[in-house]
Length: 216
Image 1: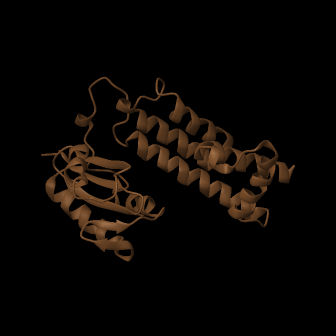
Image 2 (image 1 turned 60 degrees about the vertical axis):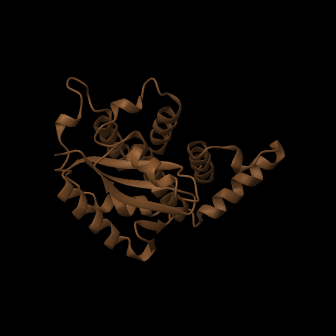
């Protein structure tokens, strides 16, 4: 049976990484009762047999041993997602097309190809535009059209890719991300704004434009 999933459930301080044969959302509801912190987000990959899911869970737990806290819980770290992605089979042999509704294009595949091309071209302008569109235009990017990867996974991958390009641009200018943020804070202060007034996607774009002005 190919209905087992690997999931990451996030709280503000910890992540729970496990597998389930039920709906990951229902699984979260089950252990939320005994969790003192609210579950803020859940990401999952589906289409595994029980043995595949169990073996993959063990591999991920071993790979993340440095952050282990207790049982299936790990200390929250921004690198957790990337490390889990590292463990997921890159060819995703366990994904079955039968999981996708017949006659419906898998938007996650289309968007992933676009992201890969834009990352190769270091086209941060279009990456940021895509990120904003996915966040605010649910009509063009409905969550139910994402099957191989969930929409949340694609958005996290965008975050990682954009951050990588920004870090490279910072290094080329002999700066750190903290330096860039400080520069943006200085520019926002006369307008009575702070970086906390903006979402991550908007802040990424501001950092990019700030770095472009330095190069010009």
